[in-house]
Length: 394
Image (tube, rainbow, N blue to C red; front, side, top):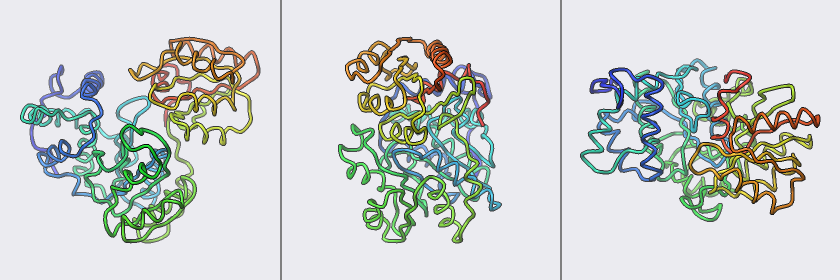
């Protein structure tokens, strides 16, 4: 598949998009917001020659662990000699993290540069602008089609039924788990949210569920085979095995490391970064880190269950440094500190609006007290800390 059209450059550039202009252009698309629905993405993909029909796929949906499972399935299929693409979201340090081919980041700037004229024309014709996520999804599908991948592992963005990734017909679907998140879009109960996620399942496909309680709903959706697995590695192994039609060795999945997912970024003091962007993620993090005492540096988005997340994370820390990511949905540092104070679960609460300065303060407090440092609550916060990373992202 070859993308029609010429690379005229994204707005503000001439020709091939630079990293700076790529960032500016993609950020500019955010003004169109989160607008679920398949009309725009289907129109864009039709204009591009339906690239999503030119490769087989594994579709990963769920509340948490989607990126981890997606990368693990990618590695397992690559270990069997397949050419594999992977589409992930969100990114932590750079946009290029989202689209991978052959174990490396794809040339996202070039692909966006070539899609921009088609997006602009569609916007003008319909008056219904393509969203940022829809553009990135189309870019991933085009990249995979052009590369001629044997398989693509596709992570859903939000929900499933009306998510832009629900334009593939995947023979294997993974439901990692279901928690209360994005209720304004997906429903108020876990059952309603599960139904939205399982809406991507096609008849005859294989569904791998990470929580046995959804096996019945998965069976009703696929009218085919449902597998149950526990933990990211086993979920990935079951999905890869179902895709290939034979059992795979899960070992390659154990080496997968993602930025911002239980990421060990420093040793003096011991420093861990994890998105933990909802209550389920916070509870998982507590289990992983055990009872070791930490200083917590946190930013949380206002549309998350803030008090519940703080209550859970207080099991790991009695000191909180409240800060705010640059995302427009983030609580201010002062508002986060006030909500934490009302809970009376932290003995010491500090306020530092600047994320880099907050992390520095947290390191100092952890070093003086002999504790570990935990930075958590939002992947956007971890993205803001990219300039002070002590170790490169894998």
